[in-house]
Amino acid sequence: MTIYQQPEFVLFVQHGWNDDYRDLQRLATTLAAQNVKIFVPNLGVLNTWIAIEPLIKRVEQQVLTALQWHPSAVLRVVGHSLGGLIWLDLLQQRSDILRKVESLVFLGSPIGGADLPRILDPFGLLPTIARDLGRNRRLIAEQIAQTVPMLIIAGDSDGGSDGIVTVGATQVTGATHVRLPGVWHNALRDPSIVAPIIRQFWREPMEQTLMNQLVSRLRSVPGMTDAHDRDFRRAKTVMLFRDGTTIRLWKNPVGIDHIFVADVTGVLHFGGFVGWVHTKDLQDCLYNIKIEFNPILQ
Image (cartoon, rainbow, N blue to C red; front, side, top):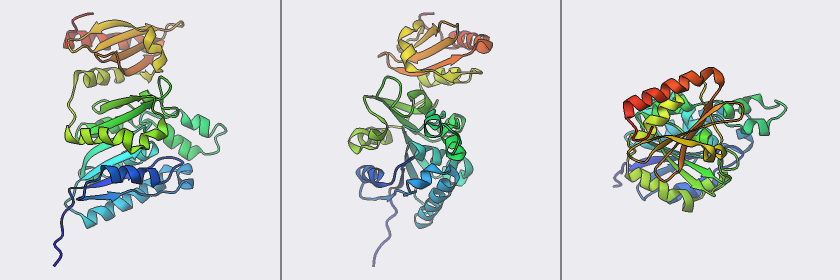
């Protein structure tokens, strides 16, 4: 008699735009132990050019099937690029599935909205997928990150992006962030690059850090927009905290305030800017940060 063995977890790994399942299948196989069930939905390359909603429905159906087969199992999710956006939208729509998710990993997903649609669709011929890729899902992700451990791995092949998605667009307050210099967008599917990082994350749950709190405050400033990393080197330190975290400011030639947050090693974790109309909002936020977190240099 065969005795059913409940899997340790069910692993969903989702490919992104203009891609299929093959590279993500290799990543899933690398990540999975013997007692793990793998699902790598193949959505079809052409389908990823059309619209996100049908892709969400196809993934949803496979998730429901997996949970029917393994009703007591938890889900671990890895999404590359558009694959991560599919899962964010799915979890926003299905709170019952969200309750089954043990962890989320995003590989180069433009959670804050991608500038890629302007490249893909300069004449507005594909309004649906362009709109889907460009939509800001950061609030959705931040709400999920309050209850589900979340890892974000971003490539940085050109000093600010992975060649397709900017580092800033991947960032979410409350998540664990890993930035990989010299790694471009499609290399984030490579098991030799990302699998050790994901395994380490699975072993060590995330913690709410000073960095996360500072970035959360700054992202909440009205009008805050992600800045390009190239301007970070121009910024001057205005606050230094006990753990080595710094807040740095730079005003561009037309008087637009740019703000950056870096860790003790000088690695940038957040960059943004506000227009003139929101300058006072930024100043008020920085004043409150000084009062609450008491930097050793200000």
